[in-house]
Image 1: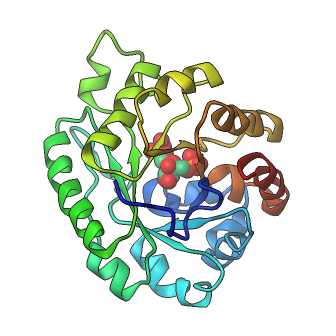
Image 2: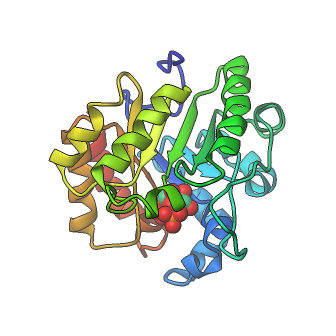
Image 3: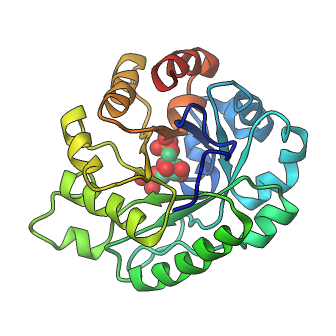
Length: 260
Ligand code: FBP
C-alpha cells in the first residue's frame, strides 16, 4: 500500500469522491431526476465544493472538461467501465484508458477500477487490475477499487444473500487489501455494526461507502455518519448529490460529518 498522506484526494485522512460515471454505467436515465446534471459542466462545478476531495469520471469527460477545473478538484480517472446496454453472460468491466494516459495526458491524481469478484470473468479482471495497480505504483497515484461482487458466483452461492450481504462485502473489501488497492469502495451493509464487521478485514486500507440510489437527506446522512462512526473514511457518491436540486446543501452537511 502506498503512503497516501501526500495525495490530494484525502482531507484529514478521509475522502469524498464525487462519482460521475453514471452516463456510461447506467445511461442518461440517471440524469432524469435533475436534467441539469446531464451537462458535465454543472457537475464539475459541484465538485469544486470543499467537501469533495476527488471527481471520478471516465476518459472522455476528463479530456473535454477537466482542464477548466484542474485547480478546483483532484481528478480520479475511472479506468474501466461498462454500459447497461449489452447483454452479457456475466459481469466484466473493460479498460478504456491506461494509467500512463490518465496521469500524463489527463492529469489524474488517482485511478479508479471496478472489480466484479464473483463473476465468471473474475480471473481476467484480476489480470487487468494487476497491470493497473503496478502502473499506478510507478506514477505514485493511489488506486481506488470499486469492489462490487456480483455475478454467478454470488447469485448461485446459497451462503450469500446478494450483493449487500455483510459476508460478501467483507470479502470484497478484503480483496482490495490483498490485491493492493489504497482505497476500497463498497456497498453500505446497512448499519454501523455491520460496517464494523467489514472493517475488521481492511487493515490500513481506506474504506468508503457507495452512495447508492437517491434517498432522503436524513436517511442518506445517517448512513454516512454510521460509516464514519464505524471507522470508515468517507464515501463515493453520485446520485445522492447530482440528482438533488441543491447539491451544495447536502455537501455542506457531509463536510461536517466526514472531516474533523
Ligand atoms: P451512486 O452514489 O450514484 O451509487 O454512485 C456510485 C457508483 O459506484 C458509481 O460510481 C457507479 O456508476 C454506480 O455507483 C454503480 O452502481 P451499480 O450498483 O448500479 O452498478
